[in-house]
Image (tube, rainbow, N blue to C red; front, side, top):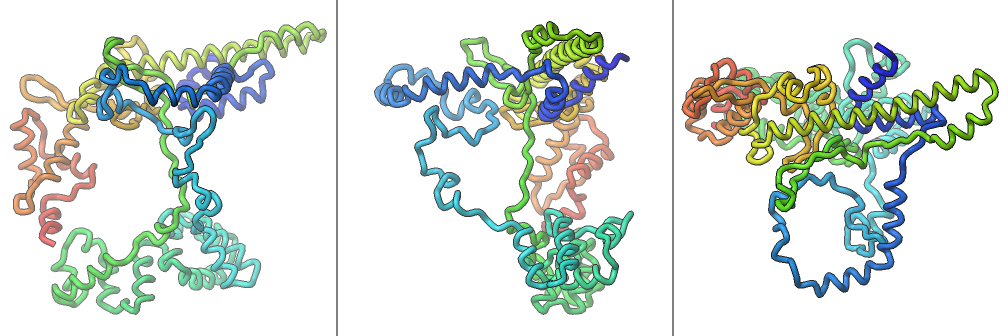
Length: 474
């Protein structure tokens, strides 16, 4: 396999964001490559022209009375096409003149909420004077997870990771576990709840026993809990209510974690009826990098090259640049071909929902578009498509088949969705067993084994019928 072919395969595996990082590195290495910013320049030119006509457009739109009956209603399928959203959605060509948006208000732009890290660092500096204590404490603050816990890894002790003595660590942790919000720096849920109960003066012997058996509480084994805690049912219920009043995630009140939303690589939108209807599929141009080979620069530099080594270098860079552009073009065509076939196969899903998701394999797509299964696998793994029903990873649409009545097949995902719906709609006095779910699915024409239902139910974290019955009693 040639280096060029290896590079093409690598590009196929990357999503748009990863591809953009790769292209940036290539731009830094190859002087013959340059960004294709023609669309940006055209957009800037259009923006400048539009700025002078904003007022005229508004005046025209205010008196426009024709053609409204032909517009799509707000709730129509066409209006619900995927829109990734944009922070600039309310900004006109001449700038946003509307200051009613809360995010753009003067007060919100001049102030911001305190982060958990900032809050804890203030407490750290008040509690400790020793610079070494402050340094180790700051490292521990940076190691907190999203819940505010300080997880200790089994393969390496915390003191080794921080490069401090166990005695120093024990002393610091004892003090820092008293920081606000109560429960931070706990090693697990039990310790987090213990710290909060201790602060409230409620950590008595029965409560300690309850915390030691949280697994029984999760399974609603109240009879066993009464025995372990040495209390009656009424006292146990009071203890459980006290636990429910605690905060299992003490860091939750601080808005300090940035959630990285998935950026789709491919977009699908509904085509208007006058264009034949159906779906349109396109690459997400906002995240897709574009590069060109600067032939003019190559010609100019080649004229100056006298040395054989310099000429060889230029030829090598030209070949590399041309191959990259070609590989990126081929990548785009391959992704669009796979995505278009997926959309065609799963059309019922996009129109009616998950219960209509068809069983599909990599081989099905590969044979249809005349490509190898490994190529389809690379295209669908780690890449996302924006649809009217949300953002999905391309591989989500591949699902094993379950046989049904008259030879009809159903996807595993659609069966999972049906099981979940049945459980959500069951009555407290008629909790469905796995056998009952098998019978109901059979009446709908779906042949599925009891162990398959149990496996699907467990994969969705749905408790057994016995556990659900206990939960609904309490």
